[in-house]
Amino acid sequence: MNFELDDTQRMLRDTLAQFLAQRYSFTDRVKASRSEPGFRQDTWRALAQDLGLFTLVETGDAVEQMIVMEEIGRALLLEPVAETLFQGGWLINRANASKHPLLPSLMRGEVRLALAITEPDAADLLQDISCTAARDRKGWRLDGNKSLVVAAPWADWLIVAARTSGRRGDLSGVSLFLVESSAAGVELRSCSLIDGRRAADIVLCDVRLRPDALIGQADAALPLLEELRDRAIAGLVAESCGVLSKMVDDAVDHCKQRRQFGQAIGSFQIIQHRLVDMHIELEQVRAASLLATLSLNGDQERRARAVSAAKIASARACRFIGQNAVQLHGAMGMTDYLAVSHFFRKATQMEREFSTPDWHLQRLDRHR
Image (tube, rainbow, N blue to C red; front, top):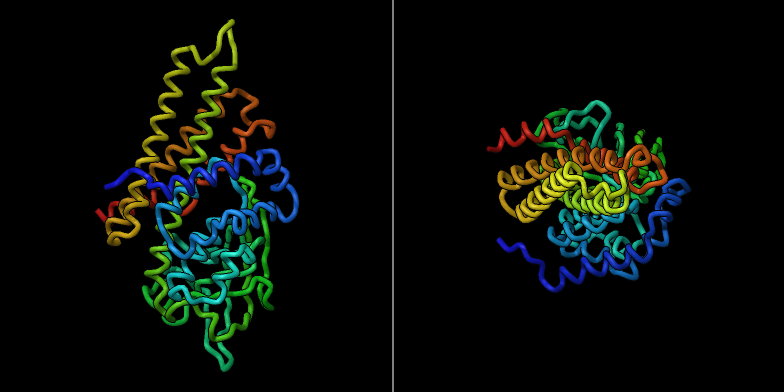
């Protein structure tokens, strides 16, 4: 197993890191999160057009996803790169063999996507879908509800999972549809997440779709959604590496500068032990992230084990590093003034995103 990045991958990492350091300051990020539309459209266009980042949808390379998501985490990027590029874009590309007419616009940064999969009363099983899509003379008629769809308020198109046959809970009968967010019958009820991003509950009432709105084969979307979820979790774990590494670095810098009893608190042995424990947790997540990434193209059992193990390690580290980083900063660590509080909110959000650690422990038990 090769743990080294090649020259092209290192160039991707360094170029993106330099771009974000120069053009995405923490102050600008906070201002964008509190304004409309809630992200920086100039940054979005630059990522697509100046860096050509969205051409990565053509390769679907897992290591490239890991590299990009870690840098996104370090910068605490608001823009829906994961939802558009590594989730929605990958799904369309995979299901339609690179021939979908929306992909060129996506690569130019002209459209944004969001995945409308989860439902209000659904469990963590992807087959637990009651939203329906029925054929009619002109195509499809879509009805149902979706809950907490991340990036939906920013999306031009929604990828909706709906049941086209069978009953809720059946392992077959789930299909995917591309739905314009402004289409008649689509209602978005927007909200803000604690990490600054936007999400929405979606009501679909008698939404009329053309026949070509179907993505991939009818009734056969579940295996694709299972793979997509694992790729999305691997991306989230890689992003958490960036978030947590920034928190560790900031905690170390703070402990070097903050003085008590005439000396830096970083010279106290108990503080040094805590910083070392934070660093160990971070390195464990990095190792788990790499294993999950390199397992994405393997068989389903191996992929499931590696991804769920990585998610468990990430969730534990998000809590441990997040809480300790705030505590080391003292009371001001919870104020908006310091970046650590914003990174802590992001880590708290990530801890339970894509199911809880308990669910992933049960999944590990099923696939051992």
